[in-house]
Length: 345
Image (cartoon, rainbow, N blue to C red; front, top):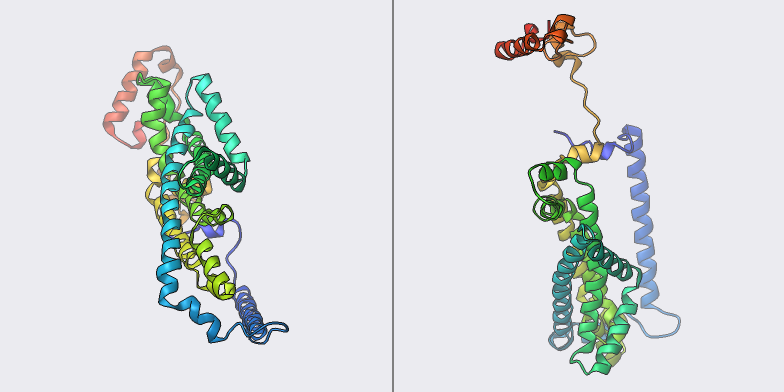
C-alpha cells in the first residue's frame, strides 16, 4: 500500500512545483557554499589575530596524546553519565507515570506533584543545586551524580507524561473489557493498559532520550569532566579552542546517535501499531472509512441487490409480536449464509 501520510496536509507538487523546488534547492545550496567560503576566508585572514587554518594550531588538536589524554576519557564520562541517566529516566518515568494513573488518590497526588515540579525546574538549575548539596555533604564525584540525578528527574518526568498520555489514548474498550472480566482497576492498568501504552509511547520516548546525550554537555558548567570540558582544557593549553571544539567528537556522535535512534523510533512505531488497538493508518487519518472502488467493488452506480445481502431488513409486525418466530427466521438466515434470503422478512 502506498504511503499517503505525506499528502494529508498538502497536495503533491506537479511538474511546475517540482521544478520550482529544484531551483530553490540549488539557489540555497549556492548560498550555503558562498557563506562557507566567506567563513573560511575570514578564518584564514582574520583582522586581528593569527591564521586559524594554520597547521600549527590544528596539530595539537589532532595528535595521539590529545585523543588518549583528553578526548577518549571525556567521551567515556559522557557515555557513562548518559547510560545511567537513560536507565534512571525510564525507571522514574514508569514508576511515577503509573502512579499518576492509580485509583489511590494519595499516590496519584504525590506522583503529580513530583512530575510537575521536575518538569518545571530547568535542568541546569537542578545540576547546580545537587552539585552544591553533594559537595557540602562530602559525596565523592559530586558533579557526576549531580548531572545524572538532574537528567533523571527532568527526562523521567517527561517519560512519565508519555506513559500517562499513552494510557489515555488507548481505546475505552480495553479497560471496559478487563473490568467486565473481573479485574480490578489496578490489575487492568498494570496488566492490560500499561503494556500497550509502552508500545504507543516508544517512538516519542526514544526521541526524548536523545536529549540526555546532548544535555550532558551542561555538566561542564559545574566542572564535570565530560568531552566538552576536556576539549576546553586542551584548547586552553595550546590556545586553539576553536580547533579542539571542531575536533570534539560528541557533536558527531550526537548527530549519528540522533539519526539512528530516530530510525529505531520510526520502526518501533510501525512494529507496535497493531498492539494498541488501532492501526497506524487509523491513527494518522482518524476513523474515516475508505470508499470502495466504484468500478470493481461497487459504488453509487452498483445494483442495490449487491449490498442487500449484508443489511438485514427490519422485522415485520408479526415477527415483532411473536419473538419465537423472529428468532427462527434469524437462525434460518444464518444457516443459509450471506444471501438475499438471509434478511428479515
